[in-house]
Image (cartoon, rainbow, N blue to C red; front, top):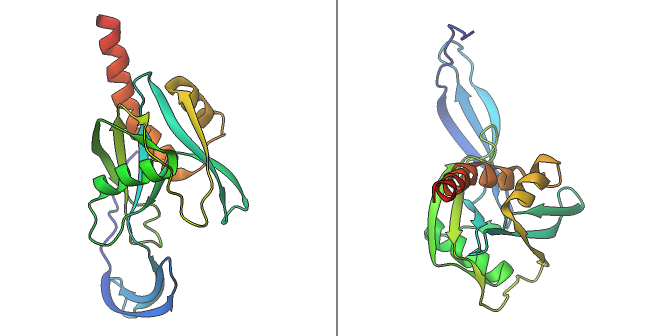
Length: 193
């Protein structure tokens, strides 16, 4: 059943930066609903855009990384990714992050999708980049606080790990979700050959 009610767009009135960090800014933003006289104050986090990379090897394996994540205080299995530098094309970022984090370089790259990591409180986007023909051919270039275990696993195994809850990073799951139709097309084409 579809609800007959349609939500209305709130009007943004004013904003103030209440915190500036090296990773993101936090704003206090006044929004007003069309049916309410008084505006309401909401917090919005403004990080830069991000990328997550689905890297497929010629052997039909995916490149994954395991790293420590401070928010969960635990290790996380995920697709490579990182921050889009100011003025940088997200496709360039994806290729760069894959190379720096894993040493893998591909023959072709394209953006599969763009998602909003958490539109309730964040203003940024995450670009899902698909890199084909990925092979280990570059030196690692980790940032000072980065350390990765690099895993290369068959696509079916990566998808099974996601289904079993071994991959819990929401953006990595988004990346695999957007990669799945591409993978299914490849499997179907191989079945016809």
